[in-house]
Length: 59
Image (cartoon, rainbow, N blue to C red; front, side, top):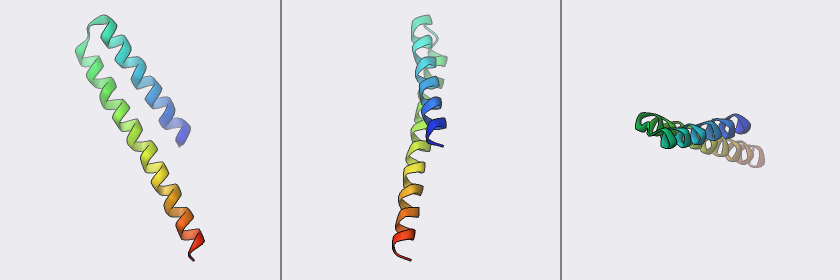
C-alpha cells in the first residue's frame, strides 16, 4: 500500500502543477485534495504497521 500512496501523491502534485500552469483553479484544488488523501493513506499504513508490531511484541 505504501507504493500506491506514493504514486497517488505524485499524481496529485502533477495535477496541481498542470492546474497552476494552465490557470485552472479547480484542478489545483482537486490536486490538493488528492495529495491530502494520499498523505492520510500513508499515515494510516504507518499506524497499522506500528500497531501490528506492538501486538506481535506484547502477546
